[in-house]
Length: 68
View (tube, rainbow, N blue to C red):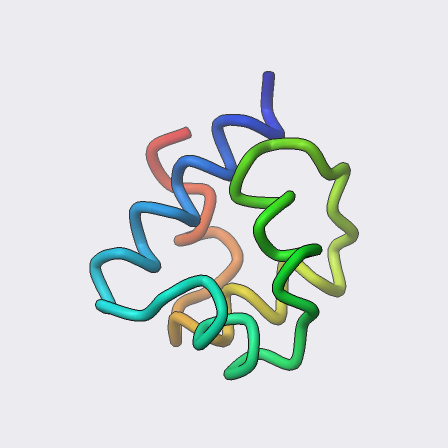
């Protein structure tokens, strides 16, 4: 399922940065519990929040989806 694949990709990128879920969520202005549910593939995330996450990693939206 795409939400799980995206969540796994986001988790991998976050771990690469060395930030906890809480610190990354704070960095991008997102509630930690909402962000955790995105990483767990339990959210049908909006494009606005996808953009926030991509910006948090300093990558484009297309780069965020690379490898899915």
